[in-house]
Length: 430
Image 1 (cartoon, rainbow, N blue to C red):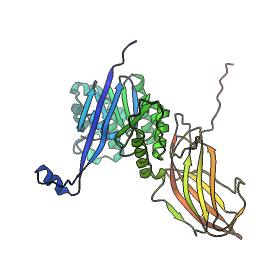
Image 2 (spheres, rainbow, N blue to C red; image 1 turned 90 degrees about the vertical axis):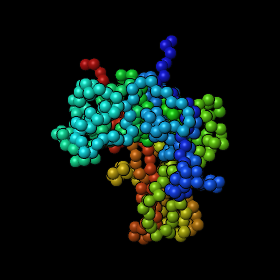
Image 3 (tube, rainbow, N blue to C red; image 1 turned 135 degrees about the vertical axis):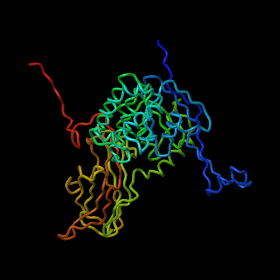
Image 4 (cartoon, one colour; image 1 turned 180 degrees about the horizontal axis):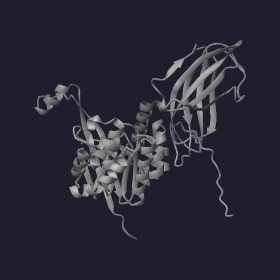
């Protein structure tokens, strides 16, 4: 059996940033004048991370904000130096990190193509051979002959992406860069990404788009608070990530890939849960007369675990807890789901579903659960909650929470429009 060739290997990688109470303390420390009293805090962006990527693999890295995902990519590409540890890279890298980094805004597009190509290590002849492919991919027309400072943000991103993606690297490093431009340009980017996979290129991919991670990655690394929690199949690691988000990460009994002990993992999970507040919007819009109040909102996956990410095709539940300050006749509990553009996609309420038509007494509490199958396309959505009713013939709002929760739908098959009709296709010979 042919031995796998290593494309990237990092061993015991650490990156420490010093945090100072005051800007002047940085200068004092450099001059040896800070004194005995320590005024410096050390923040571990990465804390002893090991990672091996083999040639031809597509490896995803996921984790909450501040977990060290972008830091490890910057170290691999040489943008940032590690505090400690070893880094080995075998192959020519193209990195989609900060698109447009290294562009000179006074130069026109053509000049910047040659400037960036040269910085990456290509000869002028090699860039000549790729120039037309880059121009066709960017598709910004005659603007390519104008100074980049005159470009719209969309045109600038298209050109930067086209340069990075068309130089035929052996290793492609991608950091949240596949969602640039309009939907047509995004489709072109993903098509190019699939071409890379078919050509056996090595890809390391960081993204919050769990659908893309699930679809394109052979293996996934889960980071949290600078530590590596584990690695494995995309579905397994995405499920673990969902538990980390809500502080319910459980260590498998026999999993050699989990590198932290139970206490460390629980602490990391609790920190992540506190930071994300289970997908709740801190700036949500709320109003109502508060004769009844929504006291808690959350979602659960088909296993009953609290989550903000749901697999397309699986069952999930939306929960709201309500406390009543006054006697009310037949309160109505509702939710709606919008896309991130604010378009209402779907929703229902307890009256429409004929699920609850009773009166309630002051001091009572209710736990309402809506359970359904997730047929929305992969992407990000917002959930709003409503608590209303009729007092006589007058419609009354007791409490409403707009855009209160975020749902991430994870999908490896998206059809046209907002939701999947789950069509069964049959083709017969005539």
